[in-house]
Image (cartoon, rainbow over all chains, first blue to last red; front, side, top):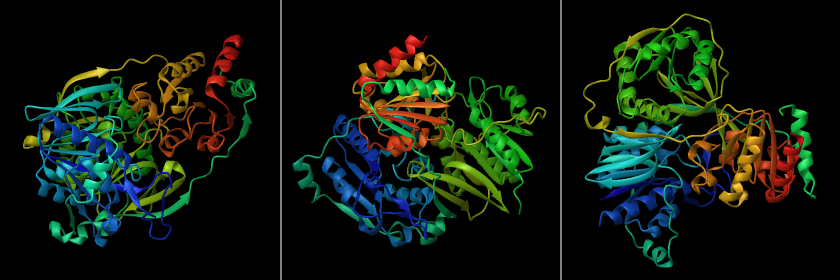
Length: 259
Length: 324
């Protein structure tokens, strides 16, 4: 059971990023970290490989400037190896261009299953994994809150508006997992040390047989024309509870005439 | 070339078109001259009246896809229509579970990009400007496509208000699913599970009472539920609470969950992570109770109570009960 996991390395959400006012690209300052949303896919992949009694977990990522710190975190969790695509030509890539790049990288790993988060924390377009599945010619099941494998098929509890559906499809397939699907393990000290020597293949756009016009800002065929600070909601009254603050809430609700 | 034909992906809820579908049809009328819908499922003709009333002149009926997940067959049917010369200028797709699947599949199939998380749309000259809330809605980005049409937009619920146009029923035209989808179209639903909820619907309620990690435990989260019941409101929750398994996903408010715009939102023990704010900051009034006086939720609150939910909520519940 070989599993490829798409992982994104993002700026620390605790120090929120912004869009560059002139280039309108996402500004990534400081070290990138493993997107928390992806830690669930990594954990799921490790568990599925363990349950299958063998197989490798390969990480696939696209990041600027040969960034590997987030990948090292996922390797320390237990993934066997990583493929990183890094190339200046990728700056400004949209979800579809990203899917094209990751599809080429994943084809090299020949996995039985591809896992990704339902959406990244920073860009959150939520379409990349399905675009990827289409390009790979695979079926896909999104919004998985439970995943199991048997007899060459993947079975998923998929979230819906009303509850959830049991959905199944044959492997190979792309599955996107929600946060909370499993509890991600913390890398052990041993894992962190081992991660330093695990294979990490770094590729460029041309290594993948793609031309630079299908990726990056050119391939995106879209532009951000303006970035503005959203109209600030005015913070209102703030009271410190001295034992009677609930009365302020009652008065507030009464004045809205909702009850 | 001016914007002429707009398509709207028509999803169902409770037997009719979903509220987001009607919002998108209403918006489509103001953007183009011809509005058409794409629908799937059994007995699409039963939707033709409502879809027409909101402005669709034609509904392309993909038909009953049985137990297949909609992403592949619906996108493939739409792609066939588009490739046969029937392309719209703009295709508006609801930001839902199936909507995102269909948009992603269609985008890759047509090799055309898609703009998602749209919270505003405007025609400007021969282009369309879309608005996107970034970083929890603290920053608004305006974007546009620079390549060929159709332009695909995935639009968040409640971005527009739905208004009927009073027009007659839409004409139903068959749009078939290509027969050569092979392994792509093998994801099948084996069983559907509906999680029962009582009280008003989360995304329609006038009052939403939501709880976050600050509630401490699933037992204490019951106070949020009791307060909601007293106010005839709906219960909401942050992602952390849903991930912890206290309440089902259908309660989640935020980037990944539902967008709510109630008259009153009461946030209990919610710090106000960007992931949550994007789903509720457009509520008309916001009341927040949180121990941490620096919690970001207070920056969007009309009334902020710095205090322990375990102290404040029981008294609030008693006071509301006493009021009768």
